[in-house]
Image (cartoon, rainbow, N blue to C red):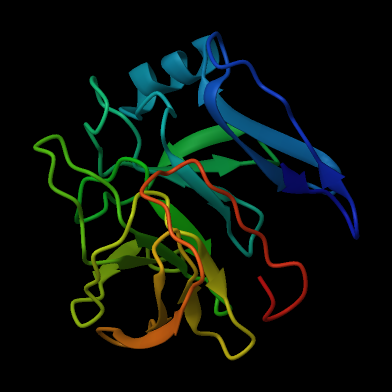
Length: 212
């Protein structure tokens, strides 16, 4: 699902197999949306730009209207990539950004209040999980690792920007945390949630500023 305009939500029910498997829906240009998934068009883009097949990726909106799509699956499950793909909605074209430092499959990306993008968690092909988040600066096309904000997270962690600009890791683990993304980053323990799961199919939403 995705917000489209003020107070509107678009729900896209996609099949578990077929041309739009493992897809994401991102609003672009008012009421238009971009569906990112494993498809023939994605395959063509991958061949031209060395992009992944947009399967098991994460996507966020940039302040200038572009969409940043990072990570994804390279071959078998958990085979993460470091690829950064940028979609330009005006021209409906793709370009390649600077690679991330870590390989990430099933990561989470979060657009920050200052326009940068935080990416956290994600698995590498050897089965290891990235514990160090990194931040993308679209103005310089660079990634910065938050070496002082290392945290053992679940796949697809539920990350939300709080009113003060910090980022809250709301789950699915019971132990939550608050990230400061300035400099090399830092972490403050959050409250203990009344639930936890060990999966990565859960959902959460911020329905009003500061309430999840």
